[in-house]
Image 1 (cartoon, rainbow, N blue to C red):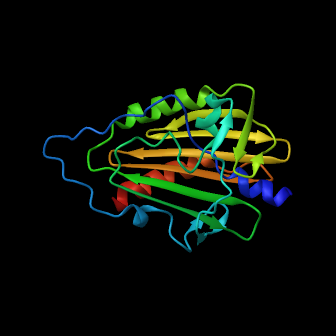
Image 2: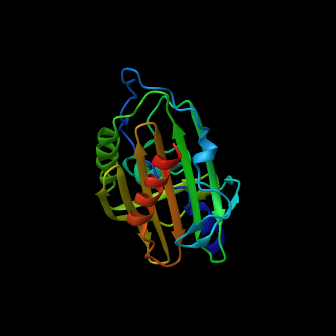
Image 3: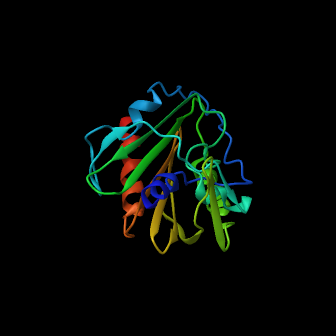
Length: 209
């Protein structure tokens, strides 16, 4: 049951009520041509959890939360933190030698995003989650979690944490003008360095894009 719960908990990482920054084309700006899948963490790359092994995103992901104000902090797949209007989308989960679960969801835009607005709106939406949040998947309800931390530690980065006594999930949103990346890592133990990792992934996106 603990493993099933662990798998299901990975469906976190979204926001509700807020439509984050519509894309606006800058004069003379060329469209982003790189496929979204090429910007995901690649199979075999190193992470703070060890070397990643890419795997398909399964069906045991949270599809809603109660209260609805906590959807922002709980959803991964279909996260409302992702601005509308992307031209390409990709997602992947990753396995490690430990019980930790990690996944990424990425959107690529032809028209540049207002990075500041996306992060600001995401911060507001995540912070709307107060008290107990009940994650819900097609399999039913799971034990409640609470928002314990949220911050914007560096430019274009938002991080937050949902936790309960036996399970911990860290989330990150990294944004550059034409890419938005949502990250979620869940483990039995806390301490994943999401602020540093999200900043590193953002820098990688800038170099690859």
